[in-house]
Amino acid sequence: MTVLRCISPIDGSVYAERPVATAEEAGAAVTRSRAAQRDWAARPLVKRVELVQAGVAALGAMGDETVTELAHMMGRPVRYGGEFGGVEERANYMAGIAEDALAPIVAETGEAFDRRIERVSHGVVFVIAPWNYPYLTAINTVAPALIAGNAVVLKHATQTLLAGERMVRAFVSAGVPEEVFQTLFLDHATTEKLIETKTFDFINFTGSVGAGRRIERAAAGTFTPLGLELGGKDPGYVMDDADLGAAAATLIDGAMFNSGQCCCGIERIYVAAPLFDAFLERAIAEVNGLSLGNPLDPDTTLGPMANARIAEVVRSQTEAAILSGATAHIPRAPADDGGCYLSPQILTAVDHSMPVMRDETFGPVVGIMAVQDDAEAIRLMNDSAYGLTASLWTSDADRAARIGAEIATGTVFMNRCDYLDPALCWTGCKETGRGGSLSVIGYHNLTRPKSYHLKKAL
Image 1 (cartoon, rainbow, N blue to C red):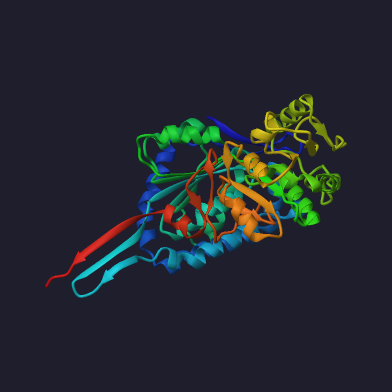
Image 2 (cartoon, rainbow, N blue to C red):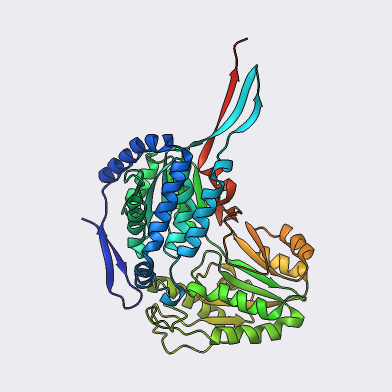
């Protein structure tokens, strides 16, 4: 029997383990979901909304227990609390727009014809969630999928093995039928087999580009619709009219929070040349104010990386950049053990020949470059295989909009970063993936259009 094990980054101990479901067990679970989904979709929308919101509230009521569990599983410091604020914001927003978002589009209603387009649930939605924000990323799909009348099967990352189990337990305790929302513990081979055999009606995946490619290959020929949020290398651009203090504090927080393990974390910063030295000084001060240590300690502001393998990628990129001429500005932290506990770093004298400015880092390291004008900044921001977000810092909204129009990215921020607005579609381009979650468009992706052309008897 194969067992999945969550290895805590705190001390390398086995924090949790669960047996892997066989393909037959998983198939049987999905069959139960499919049978239950029909009755769930038949419930009035208002009832589905109430139950989903009750499930979110039940998850939030688990409070400190969830926070400590996350620290053990993936290393986020307990001082920052859990993810419930964002979970509640996103789920409640999607609940609030559900009636309008799922309403029929009426082309004609009269004595001769009724013509309309309705939104119909896909059936069984498969959510493959990542470990970096296990509840926030999952809720983006789970809440609107259930509200739209789908059943949901959730597979969580091994690093956050207990998150899916806890989420399902909360929703079921609030009254969502247990067959309608299930979690499965699966290995990669079984997951791919289920996808290949068209077990699901929609698949949403958040994770690496490589894993996204495997999912696309597994789904090839099944015509199963996919939502894929993959890698990122998100830039910040500090213009000559920016609020320097706000830019440095916010961009460095965007680069370092959660030990840099954020889908839309800031991984490269471009600064107007006249502001470069002043920005760098403030950025260094921000990073030097962080405290790397045990995430269970309330004084810790920077926890360990989720696992040593990811930390090694970050170290490798940093060391390669330094060997190629980059300057490192942050001394090694006492808690840096060469494993999961990794010192934060700011690099200058970097360029796009270096992997640290080109490949996804997903750690507490950021490269900073001076630029001469907007054209150079745009060229460098676009010089990436990814396109999730870009953060523009200026006092001129028209300038930000003009520059934003030239950047290949899913979201353009002005004077902020690292945030998901549930009223806007969360989406990307290039190797960041395809599809979109949240907003009205999120509902459109979690349903299919069905047209009615009804000619009345004359």
